[in-house]
Image (cartoon, rainbow, N blue to C red; front, side):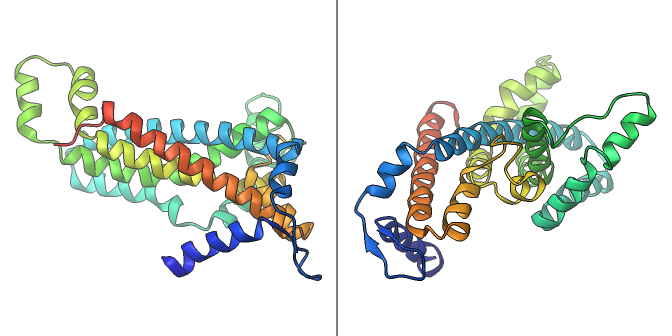
Length: 272
């Protein structure tokens, strides 16, 4: 943990105060990289895109994962439960790069399979990856599709751990399924919802493979996330100090939002 996480973070923090292109010697520039970042429209835009994309991914991932878990949990057959758990979890095991390449072909405007079937039913082609809004939505959907299996498995396990005595008492009192879900099951599995939300947010704030492979951050800057700008600054423009400064700000944002999630959780998370 210290070697593979702590030391790289400390090294990036130290490097963020230097100007270094790998070829020449590093030059100490103080806080210039952070000052420059505050006026860099491309970086500020990437933070906006990243936050909007992360919120969209987290909300959809939690809602879809919980909905699927509730439906599967109602199945009485163990075989059916095992089948659905495996089916929804499989995308998570696939390489993100391979999935992104495959989805890029699937959603291609001219040759994609999605538009092919839309045309077969008489609908016009959709610019999935060639319009700003379409590319943003497509990236979010692909990220959710690949990650929802993790959230789904967590929620299935949490729902199965809800005491049957409580559910039977609610049924005897005449509680409807929707009321049972909202007033009993959700509060009882709220610690799992918190954990799933924190993990989903941290992953969503670091989206790189899907937008970089499928759209290269475009069209324009519609899907340019902070990790893409960080990669371009450090490894394409050889501005390792500036790239490190961007990564430190992204880390601080993730830590701040995660801390807010835990503070807010004090009011709605119930531990048995």
